[in-house]
Image 1 (cartoon, helix red, strand yellow):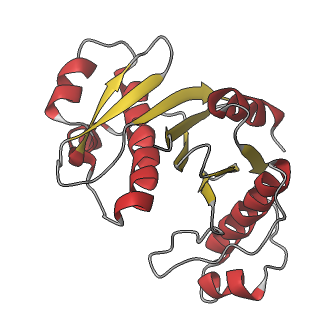
Image 2 (cartoon, rainbow, N blue to C red):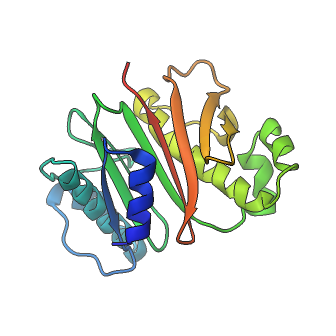
Length: 218
């Protein structure tokens, strides 16, 4: 377990979540039959990521005082969590992270992790809205900040998908970012999405960008 990443996630998410952190570079073990169906034809790299992501999720459930159970994948590849549980899994090449909580505490969660490298210049206009691009031009280290926006939007996507079941585009969300705190608020450009108010945070830790997005229950 990467203790620095574990500690950062606990600071970002607070005491209402269980956390799991694993290393996807290690060989995979055996999955439950329900989980194994999702990667029956997967390449070795995908099998490692899926396996260690599920291990991280099981760790997070145990950390939250829940009995670890199988977490199968739906046809859309999204994890299927037990009733009353909100959770999220994310991975980069070197770390898998997961968080779970009871939906009465946090309605939905979204996590993302990315290498802390600048976003490729040819992707900035795809990932960032015109408003975000204008704001980026005034920032130092704009490539890294653009990568943080990418990661934050991935976390937002996961959190909103649990409500809407809708595949949204990067341009469908405009982020209002506070660089001092790392917190952001997603403003959904698409007003047809029935999404509650959400808040998120992005920070750099151990060469990784960690992003979380969550919504509180009504």
